[in-house]
Amino acid sequence: MIAPGERRNDAAAQGTRAPMTDWIVDRLERWQDKPAVILDAGVVTYAALLRQYHSHAGQIDLHAVRAGDVVAVQADQSAASIAVLLAIAARGAIAMPLPDVGSTEALEHAGARWLLEPRGDGDFWWRDIGARDPRHPLIDELVAAGEGGLILLSSGSTGGPKLILHSFTRLLARFVGEPRKARATIGFLKFDHIGGLNTALHTCACGGTLVGIRDRSVDTVCAAIQAHAVELLPTSPTFLNMLIVQRAHERYDLSSLELISYGTEVMPASTLRTLHAVLPQVRLLQTYGLSELGILASASGSSDSLWMRLGGEGVEAEVRDGVLWVRSAARMVGYLNSPSPFVDGWFCTGDRVEVNGDTLRVLGRASEVINVGGEKVHPAEVESVILEMSEVVDAVAFAHPSAVTGQVVGARICPSGSVCADELRRRVRSYCAERLPRHMVPLRIELVARDAIVGERQKRLRRWSAPE
Image (cartoon, rainbow, N blue to C red; front, side, top):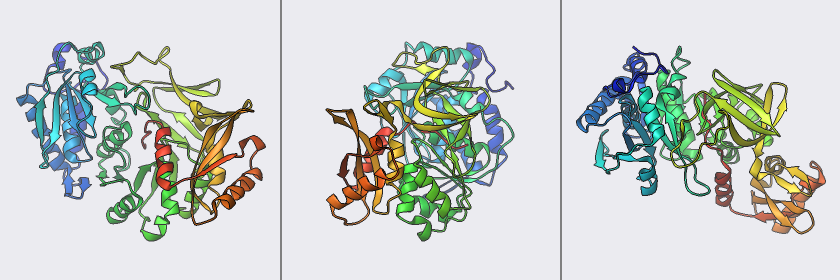
């Protein structure tokens, strides 16, 4: 058996099984009757998951999938999706999980040969969509290395999504060691996000149980935690703030929770303090990662601290002009439709950070900094103060143009009650003036519905960083 990460020649890569699955299949065989995935449709054991894996491997043989072929999959949180993605990568092919059919342009850029659509019985319809040769040179690199691949789409906020090519083999290799604690874990994101996929792979490699959810509403997630004694919740600060505001910790039994990991956006200090107070038995862990870099190991000083250490085997981090740069062995192979962003293997995350010894605190995206007459303001610092107010459910700070200072701080606020708009604006400015420097006090305040706040936050999410 070839160890994960060891290279093979192209001829070996044409075989029916890539080295990455030797150990993961053996690992899954350990658990047998343990529940692997829980969905509304029922429980799938590890034995059933393995049967699905072998069934999909047979379909891959039937359709003559070659090493390097791109196979797009409409993937959800099911055992079938986990099994087929592993089987594709085991062939040395390239799995491309999608939340739906996906854009024709993205499939063309990826050179997708097949599109798999779920049938609802644990199997997939195979659609031949034609693309095959010539292959992208970066995919040829994976074929030559005998490694299965993974294509993820970036958020595409500007100029359309980038196609991010990873080695599936290298992403899986981080789970090779002795399994960590098996936990029942909420599948908060689908497999087209690196966080959702990492959650599933980590859970299965440890013999845990992935609990799928229909949607990411507070009630759906908390009901699943209560029903299935969930121990790990990987999520976002926005969701956790909604949990607190809706007082879900009082309406649902969340006593099974041992760990909440949060990422994707800056956590307001006020939200973290409140969460720690209402769920004192739960360890709170800040996580960090980007679709381009894979998952970075992180450690928080304490559950109520926003300071963390980044690192792990094969990971280097440094701060240049206040911005975090990372070099990771698990980084992507490259973009399929854009130039390489790496400089000597280093990737600029775009996140401004503050450093204290060997720990750092993420302040926010460099592109979101508000420049008030030369004074830099990070939106999260303003938001954290506003969120301390009982009159406010949620808030987003932003830059508003000013003829005098270039920019001033603005804030969109969702009120918690029926307070007069002008009175609420006065209270917010007064509260902030007592706690923030003058240039950080919001001068423009807009009252909006909660949906508008959530939508605004979605635009600011970093690509998902998943739990460890």
